Image 1 (cartoon, one colour):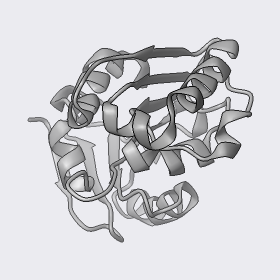
Image 2 (cartoon, rainbow, N blue to C red):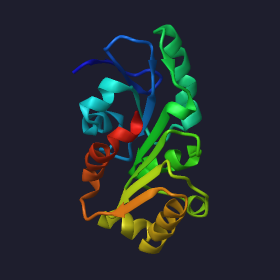
Image 3 (tube, rainbow, N blue to C red):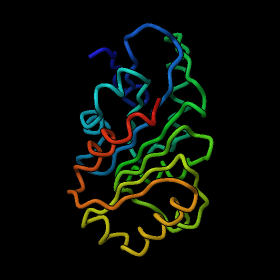
Length: 186
């Protein structure tokens, strides 16, 4: 483990690589409801992600703009710099899909959707190649509808992004997703 953990930075868990240097990509990782809180999401995150970039674990109820506002003073107080939007990624699991999709821009380095929750407005957006989604747990498909997931998938694919339906338990998506797409974060 070559990262330092800071707990409860305004309701966030922040990890910083302990490798020297002061300029890092930032990865905001949103959990979902119930068990899938920020601590659980950190446990699902491969250590090599926390070793390479600043990871910010947030609850799905906190808007991305709020996360960034809270992160700024923390970075300044530790003499750290972020690479900006072009080096920033947002990952959202389950209900964490809401703030992730709300914050989507084509200029983010990477947007990752792990069996996400979404709103109707998210289905008709234009997406770009910086988006990847893995989806397909029975509970999420039942809740949001297969047709809606396929509409979101089509919008992502149309923009050059990636989407795949997997037969996994809902709780398995974060670990599988982050192992598969960790190289896109740096």
